[in-house]
Every structure is written in structure tokens, then in C-alpha cells.
Length: 175
Ligand code: S3P
Picture 1 (cartoon, rainbow, N blue to C red):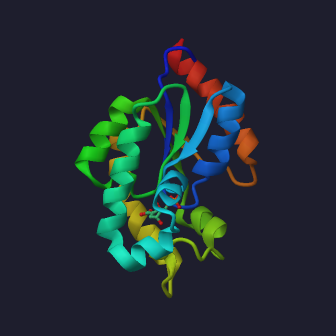
Picture 2 (cartoon, rainbow, N blue to C red):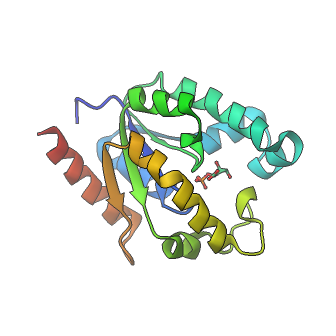
């Protein structure tokens, strides 16, 4: 994996970026960072609070700052928030940051993973599954624009299994 600078995971909420990312970092012997966690740590507040006080625009500004910093790194597995691809600036950054992997999933799979979540402001609505379907439709072209590899979610497979598969596919990509 010596040619990769970083490994960046993108995809919608519930795609498994954080859990797969942690296993990947372990397999590669790399550090793991998550843009949402770094942002919360820096801000000293959680994401729902930031959305409440600064709105989504404030959150996006902070998210871009975090991405700019994390892209300076090397040998890091970076899990990103699902909306990271929304700005052209972020998409350009992602392309230079490392190998970008899109963890894709159907709205049903995504919903199954986030159904009881209260930490994601965009899903605190009456019909979160419909929101996920809409976001998927809007964002999938953007995920595909920046990704070097697309890894579809497999039902009933663990994050560890997904990470093992991904490492094998990355090795193929580089051979
Ligand atoms: C968001 C996804 C979240 C977080 C924020 C906004 C989005 O991250 O960044 O709630 O716009 O899709 P995860 O994809 O890690 O849940």
C-alpha cells in the first residue's frame, strides 16, 4: 500500500465509514481519524449543537477546515461526514488527499443502521428513510465523481469483513 498517501472513506450516513475505517487502519498499521470527531473535539461541542447554533452553513465551514488539515497528513485512514462532497472545493481536496473509496449502500441498508440515531440533525425528521433516499439520489453522482473505488455494502457482513475485502481490492488496484 506504499503508493497511497491516505485512504479516504466517503458515503452517506450509515454506510459504515467509521467502523470500516477503524478496521482498515488496524490492517494497514495507519492512524484513523474521522472528520466529524475531529470537528467536535476542536469545537468542544457536538454536531447537533453546532447545527443548532451555527446552522448547517457553520458546520460545513468547520468541516472544510478540518478536511484541509487532515489532507496534509500521510498514512491516515480518514472517515468523512456524508455531506463532505457537497462543495466543489472539498471535492478537489478529496481528489488530492489520497485514495478515495465510496462505501455505497441502499436507503434500506442505511436506514437500518441509523434508525435509532439521535446524533445526526438531518435525520431528526418524520421520515428519515425518505431523506436518506433523497440524499442518495442527490449525492451519489458527487461520490462517484471523486471515488477511485466503489465498495457496495454487503448485507450481514461485519465491518472487519468489509475492511479485509477492501484491502484486497486496493492491492489489486495498485498492482
Ligand atoms: C452529515 C453526515 C454526518 C455529519 C453531519 C452531516 C451529512 O456524518 O457530518 O450530521 O450531511 O450527511 P456521517 O456520515 O458520519 O453520519
